[in-house]
Length: 365
Image (cartoon, rainbow, N blue to C red; front, side, top):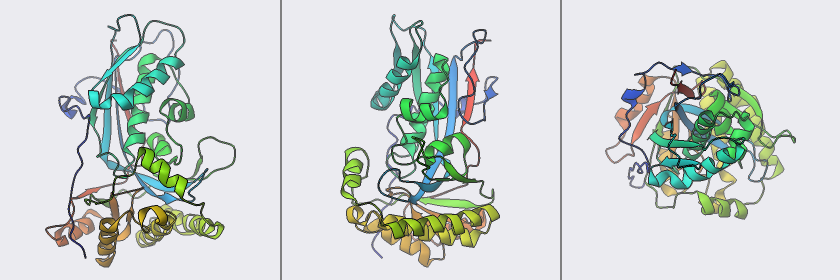
């Protein structure tokens, strides 16, 4: 096997001055239900601060490489995305949303769309802080979780209440290819999304809460290939042919007859084997642009090594380079950790996230 290198990419824009120690220092209300709950009444105070914390999204793979795509994945607790947005009444007479400079290209378009969605009223002001976030472009859906959190928090501050589909598509500008992270943000769990021909956002075909004892190990191999995002991702999709009908049917059968039933019944070995097979077969749809079912030699070597060591549910999340492996318990995950060679990539262990994003609101009342 080739030499591994481990790396944890920098979390550009993370506001290290804001600490999670502030999380429970003030009374709060936790809105746990899916979507934005309701339009605030005229008698209610608009929140002065909104805090949202969500998990990460593992993507097991797409059903097709052309719209409307479809696919499956799962929300996990770590690495989290945590955003705090505070109201700012000192707007200078015009709409203004401030943030750390590195966040501006991501925050400004969302802020403009939220401001345009507001009815006529006083100028809208807020400040966005990224408290915690995964390494970007590593396969954990950080862009979607951040954009949804910022869009929802700004809507709360602005006292507007789009439905979840509008929030995701129109305001956060997400969901072009996959709806797993969007649905996962609002409901958590394992998500299978498939097109039904009517919705702009693929609906949830199946949702499963995974057993609380299960664990997933995450690995961050250093790769020689460029990370896939932005224009490179668009170019890659433009260069890929649609999935053959028989491969799409095979992937759907894997989901419907093996992966989802095993998850529902909590049969770990069957679940793990189905995830490994589904991830590889879906990855083969992208072989022409990533050199095989996995994005580069380092990822492929790590996946093979984990499978050789008996790990189950092994694969590449999205474009990678993030790699995952599932375990039935903490003890099983730690057993693998103890067997890792010194030059192995960083390994972290987390658990499934079967609940929506955490939302906390503070008002002056």
